[in-house]
Amino acid sequence: MNNSVAQRLEQYTAKRSREVLLVTVDINGEQDQIAIFKGFSSSLMRPTAFDPDVPVLSDRAKIISIDRVASPYDPQSPRYIQQGLTWETMQPLLSEIGV
Picture 1 (cartoon, rainbow, N blue to C red):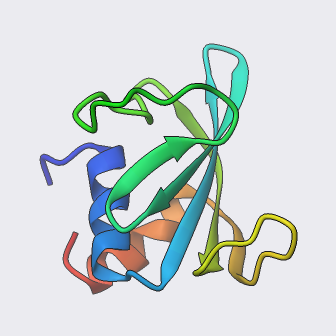
Picture 2: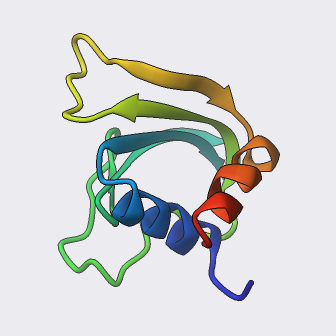
């Protein structure tokens, strides 16, 4: 598939709009956490560009873990569906919905 990791995760949340993905990544030795919901990404630790065409999750980022959370997302009391997924364990979920 030609889509980037970020595009695939965004497409997943666009199709599964009742889920939020919390993606913990390492970018050049610095950790970031990115929330992906309804096809859009936003960093929870850094400024996010206003332009949605500027990727929040770069191709050089290393995914540490992915958590699936039920929406609406409440950071004080998240309702986890699954925690600690890797990119590899996320693949069947992406394939299941065709992204």
